Image (tube, rainbow, N blue to C red; front, side, top):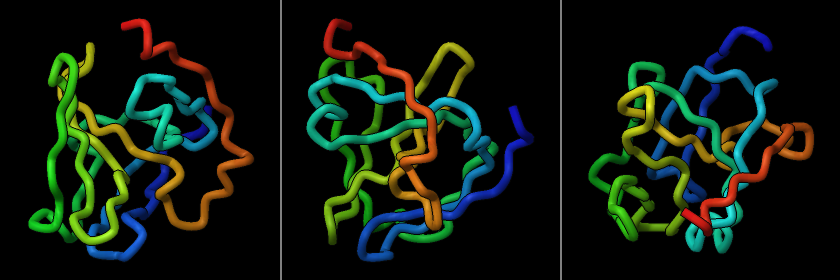
Length: 119
């Protein structure tokens, strides 16, 4: 695995922008839960101190379902979910939608299936 590097990303319209330190050589999660399966997200998780929301906090809307442990944050303008916030085994985490990172070829990112539908 490589060292984490800073990657910039955001929603489709640009109202929400952030940067995060992550290792794109690491495997991304392809989840089949009702949310991820419909939206096609590819997720990598980072601790909150490796994520900085640059703009758009006031343009985010929160959606929670099932156990309500994840805050699925959508841009109010374009509807894109470029990241989510929640608590994992290692504490507070940010789930980065790798598909929303600038200049990343998602076809070169290894994915691992995760059966969220059964949880």
